[in-house]
Image (cartoon, rainbow, N blue to C red; front, side):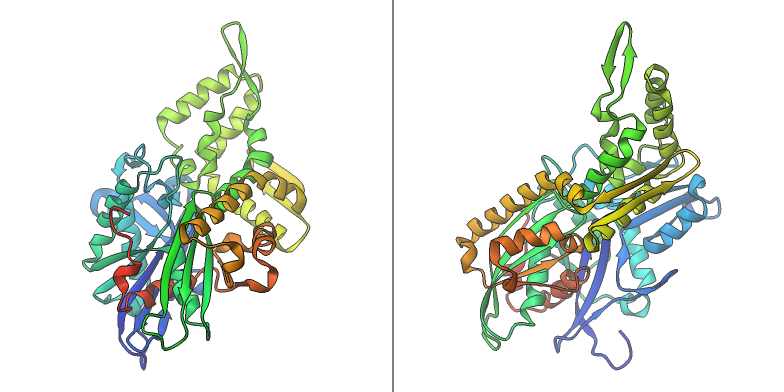
Length: 438
């Protein structure tokens, strides 16, 4: 910790799909976010990304970096590196056994430990000696059609157990709720909506008046594996994938068939798209190109995979999404030697693309209310957090349900870690912790 500040008693880690944040709380209730002197400037938000490259001078011949340094390494030498992003999204997926990186097989927990090592190293003096109590955020519901919660817990234990500290798991929106409650000066029933990269999670907390023996009481939670990454894929599906062969046909003997959607599934997830660069997948795509009615489109898909264009593609997607959060129209632009796309998109078009996802999110809010035994009119305050909470259609969903006057937001990327660190020093910590059989 910087000179003059009390020593931390607990650390809160928000291990996010897109970004991660670390906060340290002292006995007097002060919270300090860990800062990282990244290539683009000091920041408290650390991109959840890894980059690997071969180096005969390091152990096992595989060098690596994380966060903004991983992005810088990849951009410097994309052809000679492997870039992994959003790997949290496979935590509960039993089909994911390992990522193959330059012939080496790395399990989820190994990726996670490498990532944590870099977070601590780049955190400088603040993270050189962690407190004995670590509070880690986890989604209410992990990503996937049938997420294996027990498997995710086992993998998290193996990942965070490497810290050598007492680790407690708390639902991510409860972390944000606990931090937000410290700003309230009167009793309230609070709903927190956390929109991350992979999941949208909702928790309801009863906040008593300042000075109460037990200030906060969790009442109910619900979550769904739909959030920012799904919104990104809707853009990819409309603007990019048709250029890569989706909706096209191929010839099988004397029949002309539509190209199966399965060839494009991995484009819906940053972590899976990065793993498509392997011999088996590229051989399958080469065979598809040979039989496709439009082989040039499949050639463009092969180029995206071979040339590691997933990161710049999703950067263009993110830029469009952010633009539509503040403007009614925005441009999508992607230029490379193998793929060129220019398109004008209206906010209304984007909102129509994500409408099915918003309906499922609204149903999950209903589930959170039901789990707490409450009706919408019994919620006094609604706190929106996470990057996708800035999308106007998302905000309107809550304004229509709860009224604009009850909606609050702010610190969208750091509120969870802040609250997790505070929870770590709470006398009723066990009431906030997610048990293995939860």
